[in-house]
Image 1: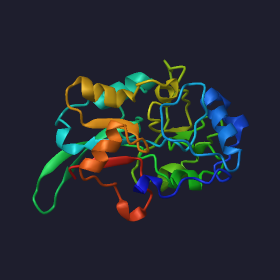
Image 2 (image 1 turned 180 degrees about the horizontal axis):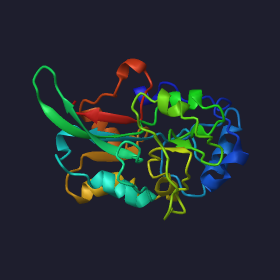
Image 3 (image 1 turned 135 degrees about the horizontal axis):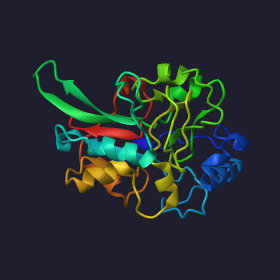
Length: 258
C-alpha cells in the first residue's frame, strides 16, 4: 500500500455544504452524491468522464523534479496566471501568485537551485481546519479549493498554510476567466486547474503543460492512485519527498532533487 492510500477520507467527514458550492459546476455537485452515500464502493482507478462524480478513487497530485527546473524559466508561472486570469499591479509584496519560483540554498554545500512552489493540496489541509465559513475545502479527489462566494477574507487560511501558498486579493479584479472566479477581499490559490481536470481526457494544469512545452518535464501531473499513470510510476522509481514532512500533511505535491 502506498502512503497515498493511507487515510482515505471518510465519506461522512467529507460531506460538503453543496448549496454554497454550486458555482463549481457539475463536478462538485456530483461529488456530493458520492460523499452522501455511506459505504460507497471503491472502484479501480480509471479515467473519469465529465459526467461522473468526483470520488476518492482518484487523488490528483504532482511531482516537481527540481533537477529539471531551468534557472530563470518562469513558463509555469506565466501559464498559470494566463490560464486563470491572475494579473499583477507592480506590487510584488501584495500581488497574487498561484505558483511562484523560489530559490533555495543548501547550507552545507552552498548549492543553490530554484523550484516552483504552489498549493500542496494536503490530505489534511490546515487551511481547511481554520476556515470559519467553510470556504476552504478539500474535494474527495484531493484538490483543495476556496469558495469565493463565502470567503470573508479573514486570512486565517493564509496564516495556517505552512507553504505561504495563498494570496489575498487587494485589488479590483478585471478580465476574469469564467472558469476561475475571483474577487477583491477574498483569498485564492492554485486549483490544479480544476476546470481542466473536470473536463476529463488528458488535460493537465497549465503549469505542467507549459513546462513540457519548454522541454523541461519538471512538472508531472497525474493520479496518485492510478498505477498506470506516469506520475505513479515515477514516484515508484525515483526518490521524492514532501515539503515540511514533519507536519505529516501527506501533500499531493512531491519534490525530487531536494
